[in-house]
Length: 304
Image 1 (tube, rainbow, N blue to C red):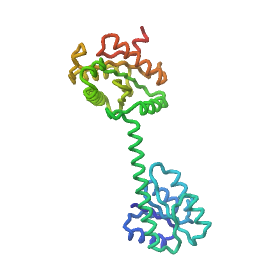
Image 2 (spheres, one colour):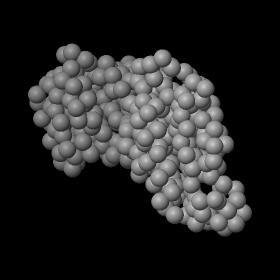
Image 3 (tube, rainbow, N blue to C red):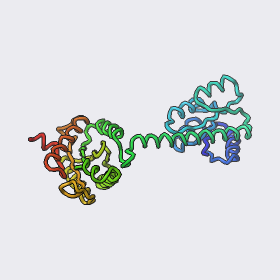
Image 4 (cartoon, rainbow, N blue to C red):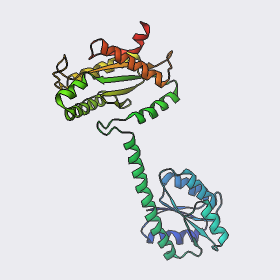
């Protein structure tokens, strides 16, 4: 465990450092509250042993700064007081300290508290990992492992907060998929969706994003693209899906294909995300009506 010691008294620092290292922990040492705060931000220690009275930030201020900066991590803070008065201890706990020791420092007392610190910070680290995994799971489609609509809503909100950041939406639908399920069964249908999802993700850049919109529908967010370049990207994607050669006796092409509709957030058309989704969906509908296995631009429909 990485432990930060903050104390302006040299002898106290040496005693505390020796006790921490004898307990088997890595030690970082600060001579005052300001340097302790800087070292905390640089190294992110699991535990802090801080004197109450120091130049710059005192122990209480350091506790408050640490607690205010924490997100998923947790730092165990041990306050060192000269007399262990109830007033000092209460003030420390209210500022965010977890425990306290008194001067002169008893190495055994500090060792016991560091054992507790290791146990508590380990539990917090586990909880942070579980929260992160649950957050990711809540935003991931379980079948295709693509992002889901919750993540799409969040990402579109972020894109629109940038305002001047151009992008295109491509709504994608697997052609004649209902008949595919009827002929080959839902297990084969799921496998086909996974194969198509993998192809969509492979054919775009890392800066782009692919979402399962629902059923056999997908949505692509193509960053920094004009309608023309987005259409070119989607033609490549459409061709790649066709080249999978997933047999479909109920489709005129004999294989599974996709159709796509593309809308754009560009200069002169700073539409809201709901409108862009509607435009992409209408362009997709036009592609379906025109014979499927093709890409249509929403801008072309507006010009008609």
